[in-house]
Amino acid sequence: MPHFVVDCSEDVLLIHHENNINEQIHKVAHSSGLFEESDIKVRVNPFKTYLVGNKRQDFIHVFSNIMEGRSTEQKAMLSKHVVEKLTDMFPSVDNIAMNVRDFEKATYCNKAMI
Image (cartoon, rainbow, N blue to C red; front, side, top):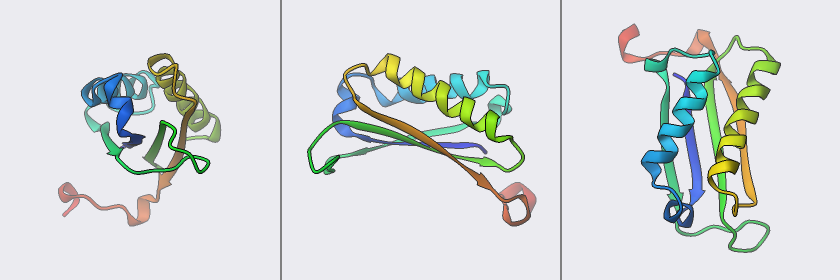
């Protein structure tokens, strides 16, 4: 935890390889000071078929799932910094966004907890 899942049009991978995207988002997440580096997970899901505003336009959307307990301001800053990094990396992509969702501690379980 946390998880950063990047949905994107597959053509953005012609600009930057998904390993580079993973690394850059990892760096931004770690530099936020909100997470232990070893806990950060990032992955990219490229899509072949999609529509944006009923057109085939490139897009990047990051879905971030983090453990509850961070302030709204911290989550907003995290989103802003990730979107800024992606905007720097992909200046020709008009549709770049991110949202943050909280995991509920009471219902979260992983293998180490069993």
